[in-house]
Length: 227
Image (cartoon, rainbow, N blue to C red):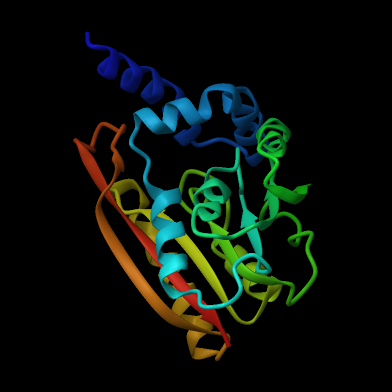
């Protein structure tokens, strides 16, 4: 087995438990144990969502990037902030449920604030209308226990005219969740809360790991603007 294949198999073995059905607390416990090898594993899985989200935000954001406040929801170890830094963003507030992930995010030195919060169980621990950009990458799926209603919490935290960026997988196991997410976004549009800036479906989003997935699976990146 080549080194690349071995790295993929190791990463696959670490990711699959994170996709299993369990309680939210059990999910967080697993992420705490996974934190040490998380970045190495997602690299082996060719996980492109952080880069894709940063690119779409950068292509639309026209304000002062150094002054802009970015709220990184489910920030993990800081992969999204690292990507956004390359586009000129400098001020980051991170929220995650995993203490171990937050500890690694803190080591990056990118975040002005880091807060622990179980998404869906509690409101986001941030001020209303405070963020110029809000991003959630990797946490909106059928596997994470994060409800689609969190996008309303994110909207409340954004400044009028600010951007909200989200990603989700397009694999067969996530179709029901994705449909629910898109219904919620459409409803928020109809309520006059947000407008759609761009939706990008990416064929090579990441390498699939489930039995029904082969090779690359696709994913979607959503960018909305708060009214």
